[in-house]
Length: 64
Image 1 (tube, rainbow, N blue to C red):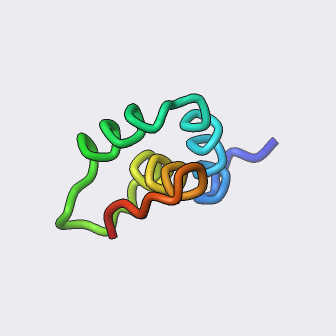
Image 2: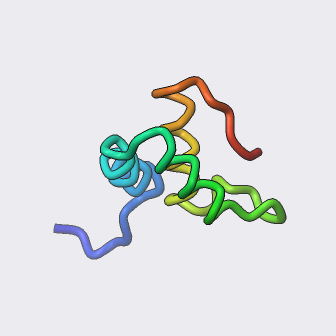
């Protein structure tokens, strides 16, 4: 067992699992609430996760 922090791809997989249960509107609400236009949204795994899920599920491109 490693004591390292999870790598970025592990974190993104965790978020993808969580967001797969969200509805389209819930994802949009979440992304709108947490998105920061002043920093690349991929820097925050939770925002990236919601954006990615919107894109893969619904073809909606959100944010940067």
